[in-house]
Amino acid sequence: MSYTVSLLIDYQSLSVFWTVAGVIMKFLKWLIGISAAVCLSLVTAFLVAGLLVPAERSFSNEIEIEATAESVWQVITDKSRYTEWQPSIKKVDVIDERNWVENLKDSQEPLRFSLVADRRPESMEFGYSMGDSFHGHWKGEMTSTATGVRLKTTDGYKVDGWITKILIGMFFDLDSFAKDWNSKLKARVESLK
Image (cartoon, rainbow, N blue to C red):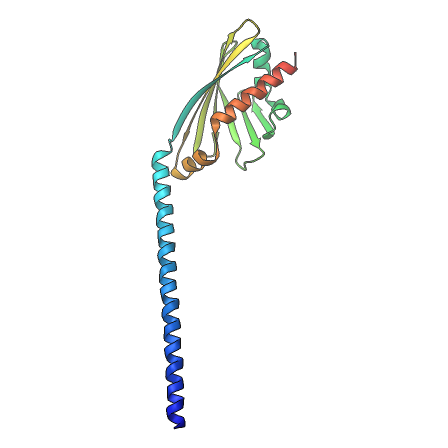
């Protein structure tokens, strides 16, 4: 009788074990299915973002500054003083008259600039790059107004690679950055009058 009771207890324990194991296996299958669906969704989102986010963008901004064109160009070309009026810049390394590097506070990669064209007092153009996958062009055009000048800036950039394109599209609004840069330029120039 004790052998029968023991066998019955072992059979019941085994039955409970397989029931619990079945529940765990169903849960693991469900968890793996959810994980696979999440991974597939992320890959799909990455591919869609890579197709929809433009690799090139260009936009223009205008700002009126109550100063002479010469005063505005003086502030723009005095790169060694950018940190005094552009708080996002940690340091500027001036390489020569036509080339400089801006080290930004929130980026490990510096922005490298070069003077492309100097047609002052009407306009100036700069090229810039960050790493191997981000390249841009800035053009400033100045016209006289009754109280000073109107500065029209045109920024354009091109990114190589999907990851860079997606990151810039998600986390960096160059248009807002340019508007902010222009307003700080205006404040700086007008404070020096």
